Image (cartoon, rainbow, N blue to C red):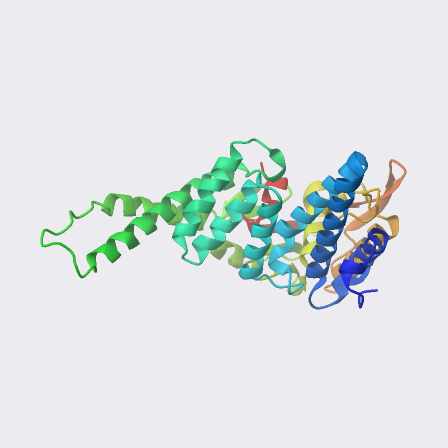
Amino acid sequence: MRTLKIKDLTLGELELLEQDLHENGEKSDYGYYMQLVTVYEMMYKKLKSLARNNGPHYDHSLQHTKNVFISHLIKFGPYIKMNHFKDDGDAVESLIKAIGLEQKLPIAYYRLGFLAYKHGKYGSAVRYFQQALNKQLLNDPKYALNQQQELHAHMYLANSALYVASQTYETMEKLPYLPEEQLPSPELSPLFETLSSNEKYLQNHAFYKITKNNTETCSKEACEDLYENSEANELVLYFNDRENILLFNGEEVIITPTQANIIRHFLLSSSKENPCTRITMRDFFGRTGSDGEVKKNTFIKSIERLRVTLRSIDIPEIIDVTQYSGETAYYFNESVSFTVLFRVDEAFANEYVN
């Protein structure tokens, strides 16, 4: 089916392709997320046309598909071309596309601001961080910033504006037609002390470090040190700037963002009393069906693949199975200690840290 042009597929065929991608797509080395996003984009276009021509009957399905499309653009955009490695250019393109679909996305503007700042594009960073803080005032919780991100947005905005001011004065001083009466020298030094202080704070609070009983922020250097000197029988899940790595007793494996997100969810949000089902984890599996529910087979296959990945570096069986509300359910059995490391600036941070 994948050899056909996706635009020629019916909605039913697109649903089958989506399910196949969720069950088998991660096995490929590249293009899995690009194919998923393309499927959701085509579903959205077809449903939009149907809703326009047939009234409210398709409204719910259209909105749900739009939400899934936006979610994948925001969360998986950096991995569009390569399943395992992030690319800032792909991330920017995906975030801009998401904003084209929905304006009330503080986290998307924030991520664009962060990426612009990272690459020294301070004028763009100013605009994006201002937009992020403006959209945050709308109080839509779905893509809102958490408290740490909101603080960072203000600090990044202040620093970006200072960099723009500094660059502007440097350019003005080089003008060939500068008047004999030189421009007044701006008193920027106190502000640059603030900039330096902000930079130091942002660097020292760049990552979340989460264990069973504690959540704190730390520097990238602290993350690297913890990763290189982890305790025996400690599971470390590290979302670094390039890839997602699982480490246990000196053995490591690079994993896809989908598997990394599922492991993170098990570690941070599941228990024997509150296990994960295909219903509670539906956001990890997209649309999967006209009813919007994850197929049982898709869910179970994904967990089995995850277990194979864990066994590849001799991690004990840490995911147990049970029944919950008539559904097959899974939970982290707490048989090993763990540490999860990810950037404060990640889109999924507000799902696990207030």
